[in-house]
Length: 269
Image (cartoon, rainbow, N blue to C red; front, top):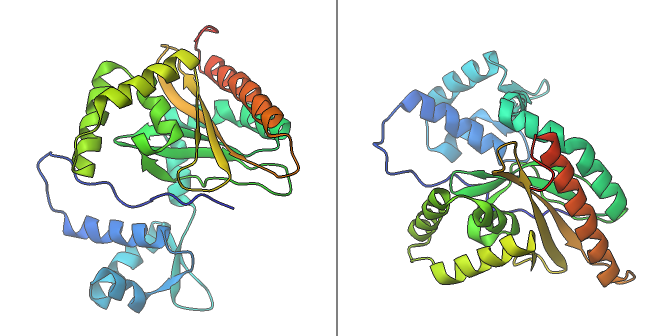
């Protein structure tokens, strides 16, 4: 099972907007293929994007030459290759973080029987950059690439709580602009103070019945928060819930601390 959060594009910033039609067409194709589970034909792509077949054909030809898309041998349908995934993991900070988290996340899932994931702040949203599936027969996980509003997620509230004042102000402003209403700053900051005092956040999932989200901060060498390690804890009717949650907290805290130390953070972070 997977928790499918919003994966749509973010709203434009207040920077001056420029137009690059050819680039936009190429990005439109990549974004459409990324959210389409099956391969897509030329005519279907053109129809969905509101473009002519000729426009899409030229874009696809270039994307295929650059190995971002591939045509199926038995049809004229296209699908994404792994090149975008490979590029994202070549980005040094993300690559270092994912590598540092790999072994601790694996042990965390082994010891708790739950899946776990790593989330970072991506402008005004949080994004999942790594996950470890549970080794249990029945599990729940969030896919890599998933994004969610900061204040509507466990990880986002933790990232906000431990961020510096400038980042918190920017996140509050973005949340208010995107929602069209002012954020309740008193409630938000009260929750953030509680998270900092506890050192973690636990909240019942607002999206999925039977899931309790638990997250702990991950710090870098400077002591700044760089990510959140979280478990979407799946309740089971034949298990001791209190004991299971207690074990999840203990193992999460240990794994988050280990990842932080691998990134150069001091042991008291």
